[in-house]
Length: 298
Image 1 (spheres, rainbow, N blue to C red):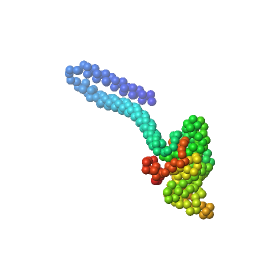
Image 2: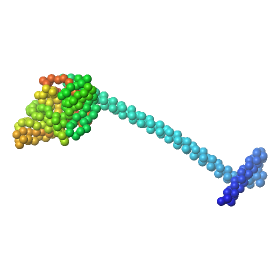
Image 3: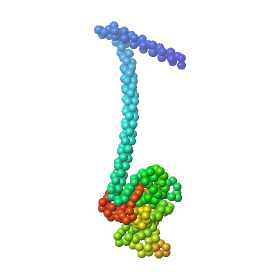
Image 4: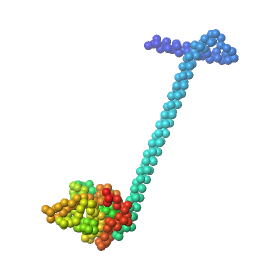
């Protein structure tokens, strides 16, 4: 190992001496040709210079590639940050656009209906398995009281105010098993009455206590009857999905699909004042605001 190092040291020293000699020859022979010995030495050493130049060029190119990589990496990082920032603002813009659309629907509905309304945002849903409720950000300070009816942005029945605090209120949803309301077949040829209830393990509603000969069929629209002092007449509840005999044929019952998307509500309207004599018919509602009733045709 020691002999190997000494051997390489001798070669290295020899190369250094030769390079110095070439340098001296170049300085001394700037204006004349190399002699025989000088030419031989230059020819012998010249491949070494070529190798050195190649190494130098490789090092320069590698350095340039590394520097360019770092620059590209930094630019890529900046572009990713810019893209994330643009995505953030795009999401905010989309959210604002959705909110604006919701507010437009609220305003359109408020302009049409003949009763007083208070808009509210849904802040949470009930977490237990025995009831179906949600919380809104309006309470006693906003004029909200117990038993006030609650509708969706497009006018479909959602439920009623169940409990109230100063700043919030709990809404008992239409599909809760304890929710009961008088229902009316909206079709002019029928106008039959029944009782609409929620179900614990099913999202669909049940309309019971229909007369055995009640004129009700699949596709009929069910609205509030207005017989209770707590609900106006003609608020859309849902669509009849099926009809079957009940109580050994003495009555009928119907499965109702709620118009309101009860599990996806973001904003609601609380009806704070109304007249039970006012009939909010769906036909006139469709004629004046068809854009708010697309779900009826689903």
